Length: 341
Image 1 (cartoon, rainbow, N blue to C red):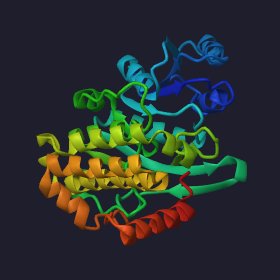
Image 2: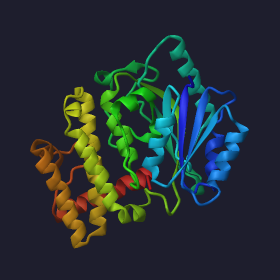
Image 3: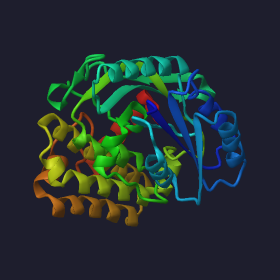
Image 4: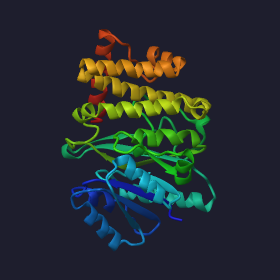
């Protein structure tokens, strides 16, 4: 069995797909790369097939009708044969030296029959055009190299979340969780990393600056203007996270995990509400009100926790002019520090 299945969702990625895939190919065949061509209309399919021809023992290609990022991830997960699965967006890339260190660790675990459900590592916000990077690490949450359960993790800082860039799940854990992402919807990576967490029994953090998250394209989904245009998709994903948080599976999660899952919903609410504030039309304000009412109707206790408590040092969202101003101020400050879009 391959150690890792790298799933590379690719839509019109001709300008950067080679940069991505070149960093995934090691000097051996211990991994598989599944390039999912999601109905591209440029040279993406041609480039993918060239990799498959050159590396037939490593690269597999799936050509499919366009269904969006989530649909491509679903196809990759269904086809994966590796022990672990890692999604690498086609405009991002890995540090090849850090990848070899990761593979060495996976080999040691397999030799000793050690099971780790979730591997965490660092990622870098890479502002390639500006020649600037910002490291996002988890040294305060986990002791490097130690395998722990949820009861033995530290506390996340306000800027720290478990996201697709920093995670690699065992493939069987992903399948057990039943995660299936909606088609033609952006921001579904939040679902991909949230839903499996309550199925994870063992976690190990490796202090590797592995993942380079490219920031800077005008059409990027995290671009502020793009986020505002796709606000309905952001709200949809937020409500799907709410659906998960109110399941028995997540209500009964270990205490520290439950705290994190609610905190993750809190930041999703924050992101949705901030961009609705930025749109600032009567329709947007009605959507904001509806989002909060959905939480209140689903779980009044959870609503009070989200509405009236500061859960993570900046996700408190009091309604009204003073609260709106404070919320926007906090967002702009975080944006200037972490440069996340």
